[in-house]
Image 1 (cartoon, helix red, strand yellow):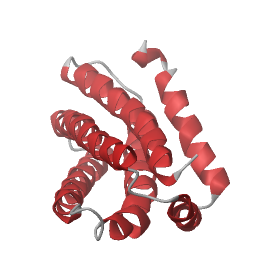
Image 2: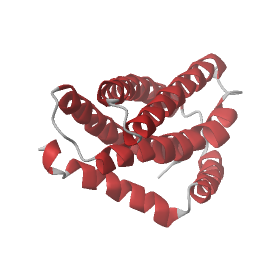
Image 3: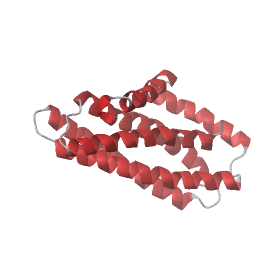
Image 4: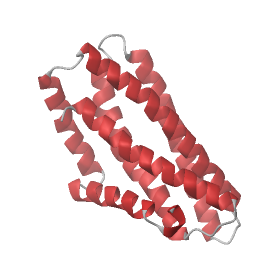
Length: 183
């Protein structure tokens, strides 16, 4: 596994979560009751797995390293702006869930932000995958650079609670996919 492939593997999990968010959004719009705990798990995974862990690897290690190579700085600037958009959607989702928990009917807002996040993450990961493919085609990273970046990724594991926590979050995606409302 190299640093670029590692990020592309994350994208597979991130997109699985995006599909869960989309299905949940569609069902909420259709007035289907979804367990509040499941929606909270989606929100938690967006904040912890996607933003803190995956985007953390990109922002703290991969992008800074790549920004000086092969004129990638403009692409990276756009990805960072998109990450901020994702954070804002995630924050609005979390705020809507708190309101809903507090007795305010926020079903439509929760559905809207889940849908917005799903659309965002699909488009965003597609663009990043094209970027990662270009990096691999050009051989922009040496084996030594990949090893160094993978070591940095371990710090990102620690930032979200370690390897065990990342494994738990991965299992939570699978748990959501197996929920009755997802079938």
